[in-house]
Length: 295
Image 1: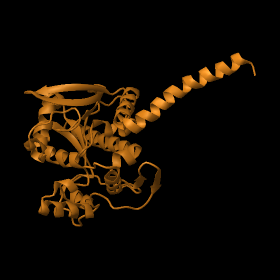
Image 2: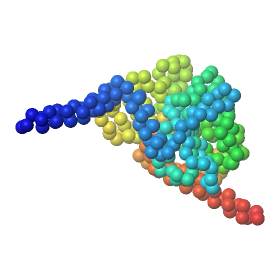
Image 3: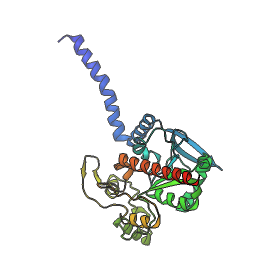
């Protein structure tokens, strides 16, 4: 083979090898950085912009898309130890003409970390209300969505500031009195008695602890980092909580999804988006019919 051709292949191979090796090294040494790049990429694809708001020296970080229109604006509250980007899978399947806002909860990601008072449910409700005022979202009733801890905050927010809202979606909300307690809740009660904060399952510090957390949260069971397989597993919150909400909230809709764990918005994003929009449209139609009757 001609020497020039060999040299050309060597140069081409070296050119390709450098970015591949850089990617592998980044994955092994800086996985968090790659995850940030991944979220940045999807935010750009979905036209979600990151912005900041301030209320009396307290800083909120949030992402948003679109502007208030005929449909209600939607505010999304994530769960414990997550952040605003956990909603990207759902955002992908929501109409582009709906105004969406995803905020980092107090002490999470880009939002200010302060005293422990802010991390109680009442403290978080107070902060989210401040956020709503800071971006003037309550000028028109909006739809509030919360999952897990965010679902607890959303439920209490609805009780405290009902006039701000036209509807609420609670996805696997924490804070209910469950007829049947999950093993996860039982474990938390044991940790509370011993005052052992190191064993909280939702704050992993090793790959093994991450596996245990994923076993709790997902129907899809992950073996880090080699394989992924499906198995029926323990969930964070017992499904019996759905009946509690159904009895307590007249006119509510309850949906139980098969093959899904606690991380509903990440495991079933398309179905979540469909149910959210169906409910918003149904609520809006009820409002229109009520107005017609009054007139």
